[in-house]
Length: 315
Image (tube, rainbow, N blue to C red; front, side, top):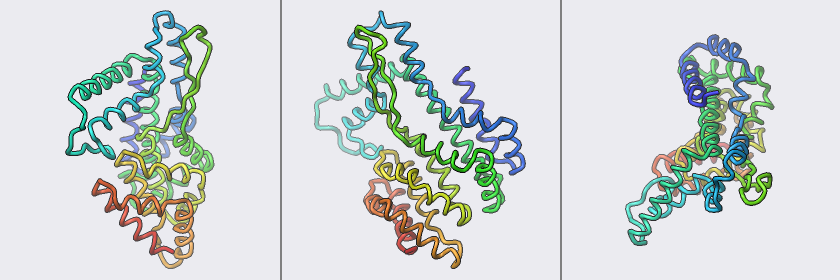
C-alpha cells in the first residue's frame, strides 16, 4: 500500500528483466502474474484520493483553494516555462521582456504549485500513479528487448510470449488507453460537496515515452510484428499529435518508431514495407516528420531526416 515501496520494487524488477535470459524473463512474469502487471499500469487512484480529501477537509477549504485544486501542476510549469522563454523544453538565450517583478511572480507561482503538489492528496496520488505506471510500462519494454537478448530472434520470442500471456488485443488497448486524454471528476467545495465538475487530463510525457519505446521494440522485430503494429490504426492516430510535444524524448521516440516501421529486412519485405510507409503517410506521419526537420533540437532534426529518408525510399 506504500507508493514509494511499490515504485522502488517495480523499478528493481524492471532492471532485473533487462539483463537476464528469456527463460528467466518468462519465469518472472509468470511468478508475478499478468494481472498484477496490468493492474499497476492501469490503476488510477486520483479520483478516490480527491473525493476522500474533500470529504475530510472541506470545512478547512476556502474559495481560493479551488484554483489550486482544479489547475494541473504541469499547467503551472508551462506558464513558468513560457514566462522564462523556453522552447520545446529547452531554455532560450533571451530573457523575457517583462519586468523582474513579473519573473518574481512567476517564481512564486511555481513554488505554490510545487507546494500544492506535495500537500494535495489528489495530485500526490496522480504523481504516484504516473511513476508506477511508467515503470510498469518500462518493465514490458525490457521484457521484450533488454540487454539479455541475443538478437532479433530473442526479441521476437518475447513479443510473442507477451501477446500470448496478456492477449495481443489487450496489450495494444492498454497502450492506447495510456495515450488517451483522461476525464477526471473535480469535487467542488462550495455548498454541496457531492457536486462535481469534469476536467481533461492529458497523458504525461513519461507515459508517452514509455509507450513509444515499447512500440519501437516491437517494430524492431520481424516483418510480422511490424505489420501487427501498423495495423493498430487507432493507437497510431493517438501518437500523431505527440509530434508537437514539448518533450525532446517524445519526439525522438516517434522518429525511431517511423524508422523501425519502414525498415525493410529483404526484398521479400519490400511490398509490405511500402504498404506500411503509405499507411503512415495517410495518418499524417510524413507531414509531422517534415515539420521536425526544423526542430530546435539537433538530435531530433537528425533523427527526423533519417526517418524521412527511409520512409520516402519505401514507397
